[in-house]
Image 1 (tube, protein in one colour):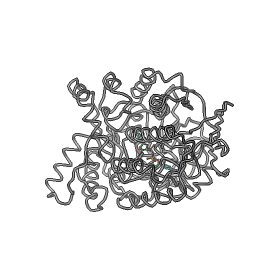
Image 2: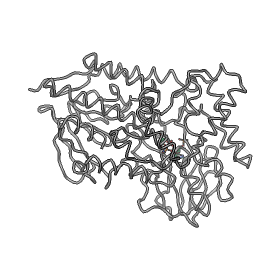
Image 3: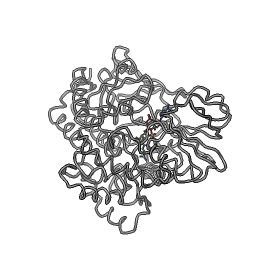
Image 4: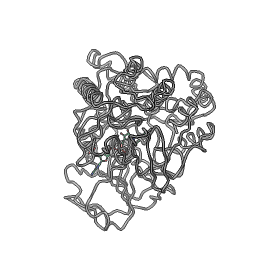
Length: 519
Ligand code: NAP
């Protein structure tokens, strides 16, 4: 939907959006699990479609829930009259680049075929579900669900014994809500996780008025900071502040809630020592909140730096373990052996269950692209080209795949950001590139291998300047999917710096790109 609006309206071109679901909304169409809500604050969580939309739409909460975000996206689709250009229920099954005509031939699962000059993928960084292959799942007599493919009619947990596998952002959002209605909830935790309190609340009329009146200022901050949020990272080291002052600052941000905690000091993600001050603060908080010491110990036994995996923002996650109907199982110590007809069996115990919820994440960043079955120059598929890990130029184009653009592709800041500003920057860049081609009578744009190699070196260098690649079990590296090559995928140099690079590339006559004139 995003690319359709910008390209169609700015270039007046015909654009077709293929949507696999029976409604618009992408992530927010599919992720209907209990507790699903955005983790960036509502007034910053918006694609800048138009000033009018920002003024007209009113968010109700600091962190809106999935139904509200989906309503917003439907409102946008109506407002911008996008629906006539969107083909719903249309899953692309194949795309093939025709070198003779410089056009893409696209086939869909429902037997339709399209022919297009440009193929722009906006398939999401986190949309290909990661379902672990656990022996015995087909024997299970109860019901099971993956959070990213949640049934639209909802799931009734009342009176049920529920097991949740996974304590990433999704599990951490879902666990408190499931616990509130299940007879018993068993959480199977492999890697304990940090989480920051969201302190979600309805937005006050004063705040709504402020956000509308200052929409341009907020947008300016979002487009000039590191992660696309509505606040800047302080230019101060955690280590130059006396301990009592630092603890007070952490306490204040903890009480305020949200990601601003991470923005208190500039070196939280670059210095292990600075990071440990924040990590220690959160571990202490977990131990204060969770009443049973052995459970608190298990939750706080975190083996990686704070924010080196994308930090969740929660509503009463740790407090949930104080409920009598919730238990925590350490599957790092006693791994899951199999699923039986009656539940989950670890190496130590069998847990009888009626429902299993897999909050096990996604084949992130590359999974949804590789699945598309795309064939570029010389008959080479994307799966073949990326067999050792993704390679792109700026996360915008892939060598050997001319006239194809990847919105928030690997090699761009994407998942290290509040996603909408990252998506928006890509859409604007692609729009300018296509306009440039039209103005100059160019027919084809592509990137040579050398551009991909040089950019990959930048991606590696940016990651290695942070603590991010130190987490060996992170999905940023692809480590959550067995057999996936382990390469740090997003660009960690920050969105504003990346934006500057993309601008310089344009100013330098699209440095690193190659264009061909129409034959
Ligand atoms: P995730 O961060 O990859 O977490 C998956 C969880 O499942 C981890 O705890 C993982 O354990 C566990 N797991 C995976 N395979 C397993 C297996 N075979 N056995 C046992 N445990 C297993 O996925 P996610 O929670 O869906 O979050 C993914 C990303 O989506 C987030 O980082 C965030 O960027 C985004 N997200 C955003 C929002 C939002 O904006 N509101 C909400 C939810 C998610 P290990 O850590 O040991 O691998």
